[in-house]
Image (cartoon, rainbow over all chains, first blue to last red; front, side, top):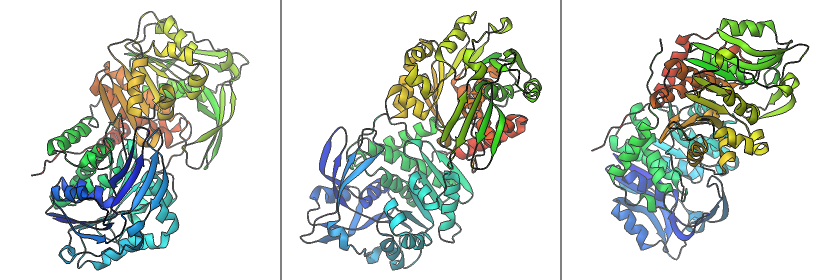
Length: 313
Length: 313
């Protein structure tokens, strides 16, 4: 089934304790679409904006992964959005040194005509009003609309965010965002409350990402606890959350299913893709994986979280 | 098989956002032995010390759970150890308002003659030198010696702790203790390094407890990721870590096994007992459980962490 991805495309400056990289390909739509492409939905399309400095190697990468870039607006003489971040020693915390919106400042997403009926839609982390506007452009409601957001909008644009939330049936947030949204310390309570903020839909999915502690999936009345991939070393976590979303929805779009069993597997595939993302700089970890590599880590995650009941006499 | 538990017995003052309780039965040996008793190892014995203020209801509780209290020294005219703690709103953090060692200040554990050959030994969180001394008293090496410790000893008695660590084959710590012990942010790396601090033994087990995020079991070359029990409300987390240890080693002692499969199940049983511990004040949540209740939560943990691979075409 078809999948539409809306979000940012960026050329970042990334500093980790191990290395620094300038002009690193980034942005939520980039990571989401690359990760989703491994599951080969019928079509993956991106809506976003770049300047004419967006490098040929990036266009080539999208082509190599069969990603439809006709929804990416190129602003002549414009500069692509750029984030400059520095990771601390523990890789769990980071400082934003600069955010240069550039062409992103005036971004008004326009969904191309041939993508007005996507089966699946991901709204990467952008202004909530723009996310809402994309939903309004569509000719019919996708089976799944998956939303991302961040602390900046939760505290600074809460009303707009709530409106957008009430128009989607799936949300991915990290644990601190979840607690901030519902103001409750328990993630189990938070997941339930977040489901109630979503659209009045027979399906309500919330995923809370917990980094090194895995993820929780709230699927209607079900809760699924997914393990983290046991990475010893993290090279660059930039884009890991977006990559998780891309793996998650890419798998569902390929299956053409939003069943609970498939949603659980989707969380595991998201975890696998995110683990590969963290193991190299920028998008390099998810540019040329094989399905054998993806299945191998899926099986490892199953192995390290499986146990059986043996009643005792 | 027989199980010996060494640790504190206490009468605590507990303040939570919901209620305050004075003279609450507590102490590591209390929670460990109560939790272990559900798996009915051949014998569970406790070595510890109390004052003659230790209440009859506590002795009665131990008797009702068939716990051998002959190793508990009663100091005439002595006062039982007491901890006064206050939990914050989120229940994840707490302040120690007072620690009155009382009879515990002069505690020298003496293992009763009929417990000099235990098959399994748990060393609750006490001075590392005393933990070491208990090991020295035994006539032969138990199959498993499970050690607990805390930040106070890691920073204040590191040399003694290292000596004790190098004489045991199993360790349970929480995530912050693990990071402090090895000074590395990754829990996967921490688990591996902690294994290397243990005795030169064919079996090396490290469990890192992560509270609401579950637990990691490092068993020789294996890693197992256990889910947390999805509690919406925590009433009193005091003793949850000790209860986890008790469930863990109680199950292994009953099985008479230290296999990997049993160790995984033991982590789940520890998680189940700890979840019941948190749902009531003091020891009340683990005083009269049925095995049916324990199995029910075991099955729920299996259900909420199970998934299957479905390869895609």
